[in-house]
Length: 113
Image 1 (cartoon, rainbow, N blue to C red):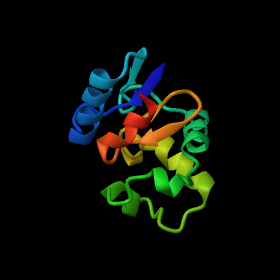
Image 2: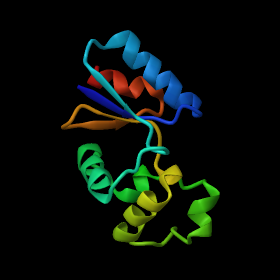
Image 3: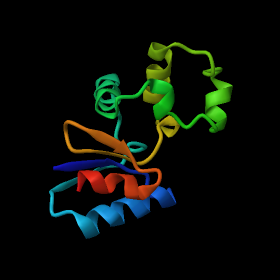
Image 4: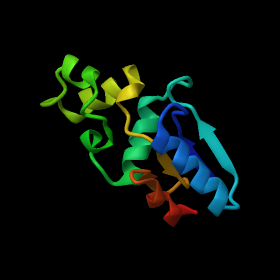
């Protein structure tokens, strides 16, 4: 099964979702993370699957990133910020349960299909 952490207002997220639908026969779970709460545990699991640091999973150009003074924040603070402000999470993220990929560009996710 594939899980996409999706924002329907984001063109890259929509493109990624379409690529998955066109290229995968795996069951698909769509998580609209701006509507459904995402927990610290969810984020930590995704970080492990992505093999990246919290800052690499964040949208650092969002105004909320600067407003919350996150540039020099530690990992714990960054994870807490993503839970409190899910808009800061890079999108889309697709997971197969053991590995995850950020869909930028959307074709990145084809390796999971």
